[in-house]
View 1 (cartoon, rainbow, N blue to C red):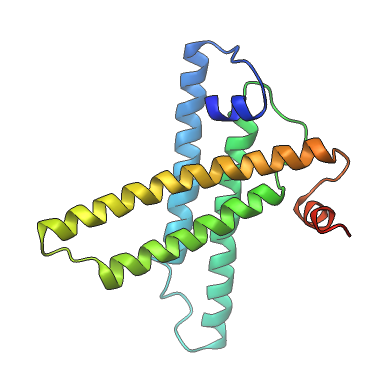
View 2 (cartoon, helix red, strand yellow; view 1 turned 90 degrees about the vertical axis):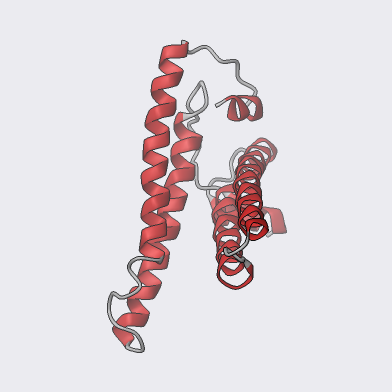
Length: 173
């Protein structure tokens, strides 16, 4: 909450009790979104069978739904976390950056755990813990960078709305 207030140049005016309620509600909602995205990608692998057209179609649908859930998590944070709600659209170029970065980082982390991590030794378990901590820290940095990019683009060109329009504006088209 404080990070977004700093980006949006707002002063915290809510009571501690109200901030706590909002934080818990956001934590639950975002947890549901992230766990749902994770389950769609991992636990639902068997849906539709493998090697069939239906299986390929369901794979694309599952990934699209997982990305939509991650986008919803970003949208919930950006909409409800700041002291004063923003009237602008929450889907900007920064939101796209956050979701794409989260997906890439998650795939890289999954590759590390699957092929590199050694769970049989204490040093290997410690390494996995350190890499997981770095993953969570980088996720927070990527989120704040995405929000900052959205805010900077909105300040530079307040009439340009939406991720695609911002992308075209940045390219000068």
